[in-house]
Structures are given as structure tokens and as C-alpha cells.
Image 1: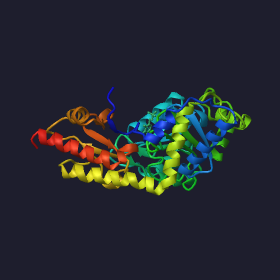
Image 2: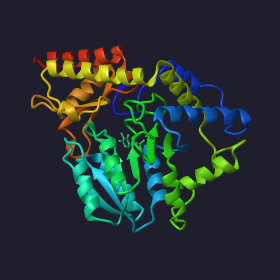
Image 3: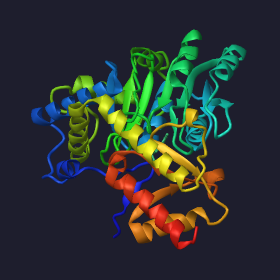
Image 4: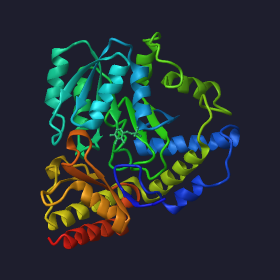
Amino acid sequence: MKTPKLMIAGPVGISDEVREALAGPLVAHYGPEWVAIHQETVELLQQVFQTQNDLHLLVGSGSAGVDAALGSLLSAGEKILVAINGFFGQRMATIARAYGLDVVPVASPSDQPIDPDAVRACLAADGDIQLVGIVHHETSTGVLNPLQEIANVAREFGLPILVDAIASMGGISVPVDGWGLDVVVAVGNKCLGAPPGLALISVSPRAWGMMESRPNRGHGWFFNLETWREYAELWAGWHPFPTTMPTPNILALRTALKDILKHGLESHYQRHVRAAARVRDGLIGLGFELYLKLAYACPLITAVKARPEFTVSELHQFLLDEHNIMIAGGIAELRGKIFRVGHMGLATSDEYVEALLAGVRDFLGRRGF
Ligand SMILES: *Cc1c(COP(=O)(O)O)cnc(C)c1O
């Protein structure tokens, strides 16, 4: 099997240290020794989330976390505002509809951020809305939405906010308590440099209150956040979660978190900023045009417009075959129109960045440009 350098929007390449933590002997997920490791991992995550809120590790992908949050917070028939400016905003709306929620979309074009004034106007016009849902970094384009402003708008209306921070947490600052973010979903396998398989969710006291006031939501057991809280309390000393946990995955996440916090969050954020700047300058120098205005672009992904001289898939395949580098294409409507380079995990290293630029230069040279 090929093991290309991953320069996509997750999963990301992991360090040797994280890989070793993943590959150790298998340990059981209960008993005092494991509980201490689990607790330490939760506390390290709270530092990254900048929160004192409860934080749970659910088994599943990022979407499982968004699914658990939506199903736990609201009952079928209730209204949610979902901000949509790309594939993952659409995904949040799809999950909400799957729970029978009434989705009120506030949309922006895919190359622009959500407008806080549009959110305010929508909330002012519809007093039945119970929750605001938004993707922080819309990975399908790289747009960074103005989360703090939108959280402030939600607060003006006394509403809680659910944030898909799957592709931003750990890569840029997401001050959960500072910005008053009620439920925040992240994963290990994007900006935290850990393997896939865990959804990380912080829950504010107000969000727990919402769940308590809706006792008959009827959204099952495993993906009900209240189940996770119940076991965290009831079985605190020996098994603070309801089910078997992927212990290798948690050990790897803990190692990745310790490494990030050892160097400091600010220094971890700067790695992404530097990698994004170098890739952007390099690609512009090679004649490419970025999909976004720089002011809208998150430093964790760079979306680049396709060129008329060749297709995105030709470039993608060449980099894979000749340079062992994997980049991402466009999703849905943007398929074939853009390609995306991730600046997460090992993709922030000079080695990956220079290899990518050398690979693209080689492609253009062989095509005679
Ligand atoms: C990757 C991603 C997801 C989906 O995560 P899965 O782990 O594939 O379920 C959701 N939202 C955003 C913003 C993402 O980048």
C-alpha cells in the first residue's frame, strides 16, 4: 500500500511519537490506571479548547459528534438556524433534518464568510429558533467564519450556539469559554495530529440545561450526550464512559496533546500560519490563483483555482505517482474547479511544504509551462 505524504484536509500524517503510542500493547479501558489516563487526556483537551466545560470523547468520526450534539439538544419539530457556506454547513443541515428538526438556513456564497448581520436579521425575524449552528472553518473552501461575532449575535437573542470546530480546533485559537460557545465538536485527526476515530465534544452548563428541559427527545442512547454524562458521574472511579473505548487511539491523542502543549498553543498555531503563507506564496509564484480573498482564508487549508491548461485530477495524480504527495480536490459543486492543500499535522513541516512546491514545479516543467 502507498503511504503518501498527506496534504489533505484530514486525516493528517502523525509524528513517530504518536505512532509509537498507537502501537503499544493493548490495554483495557477501565480500572484506576486507565481512568487517570483518560482524565489527563480530558484535561489536556480542555486546555486546547480553552474551557472549563465538561468534555467527552465519543467513539466515532467528527460527523458523529455533530450528530450527537444535534440529537441531544433539540426535539423533532424544533427550529435551528444553520449557517451554510459550503459542504460541511450543508452536512450540519442534513443531520439536523435527519432528526426531524426544522432548519432555517442562513447562506453565503462558498467563497465568502457568513455575515453576522444576516444571522441577526434571521433571528430577529423568527422568534421560534432555539439554537444556532455553524461551521467555524469550512474545510470545503478554507473560509474561516467570524465565529466570535456570530456567537455574540446568538447571545443577543439568548440562544445557545453549536460549533463544528472539527477543522479548526488546535490549528487556530478557539476560546470556547471566552467566546461563550455552548457545544463544540472537534476531532483528533485534523489539527491535533492524532489518528481518526474520536469525536471530542465540550458541553456548557446551558447546553446541559437545554437537554434537561427536553426529557422526551427520544434520540436513542449511544449518541445521547446525557448518557455520556451519566456514566462520567456514576462510574467516575473505574469506567467514566458508557462503552468500550479505543484505548490505543486515546493514548496516541494524549501524546499528541502533550507535545502541542509542551511547545505552547501559540507556537502550534504559528506552524500552520507559516506553512500556509509559504504554500500560498509559492503557488502564486508558479502562476496559480487562490480561490479566496486572503482576508477570508483560514491558515489551515489553501484552496486554489484550477487552470485551463490541465485538470485538477492530472495534477493530483502526478503528485501522487511521482512525488508521493496527496492533495485534495474540490467537493460537490467545486469538484474539478479547485484543489486544496492542507496545512495540518505533518503537512506544516518544511519537508512537506518544500516537497509540494517542488512537485508542482516539476509538473509544470514537464508540461512545458
Ligand atoms: C472533516 C470535517 C468534518 C467531517 O468529519 P468526519 O470525521 O469525516 O465525520 C465535518 N466538518 C468539518 C468542518 C470537517 O473539516
